[in-house]
Length: 218
Figure 1: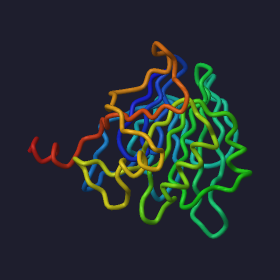
Figure 2: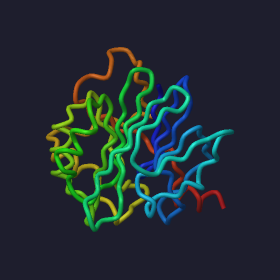
Figure 3: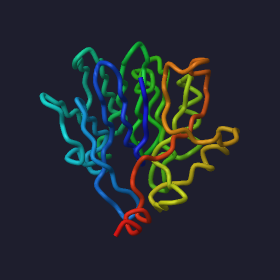
Figure 4: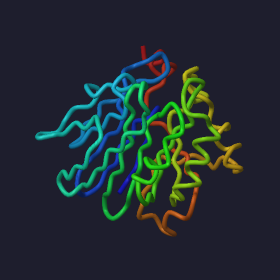
């Protein structure tokens, strides 16, 4: 399986079973999505995402809430993370090629212990850095420690080339995890030599178009 990042919470999980796109978003002053298509599109929070930004394959599926799904051999679990009185946020766990990938969405606070337990065993954690009105960086670092994934991939953070005041910068997360930021990679192949490691922080290069790039092309 190959995992690529398109900025914010948007990832492409590409496997022999099909392609999954998570949290596509509308164009903003910071980022724009290239043209993407998928067999499965997931939306963790309706107000934050825009499912129409992705072209659905023939017989494509859109998942935007909790539940258990099996689509073309891909098993998907949607776990509600929000508490009463807050807009719904759904975390999705995908099982592809024997690897469990968890996309946490962008919760407003640390989820209850029971919800964390519902996520099950996680190999790859797609984790938000968050922002001023979202889950605290310390809380997300604690959650990562609790889930004990083999690989951690940050999302929902402000990029130097595309600042976004809704989100913190990546160095905030590195500080909480007590690690140095690694060199960014174009994608993560879960079958790479040496395996996924244990608790390894992997930073992916955004494949989204930035505002600066859009201006330069005009």
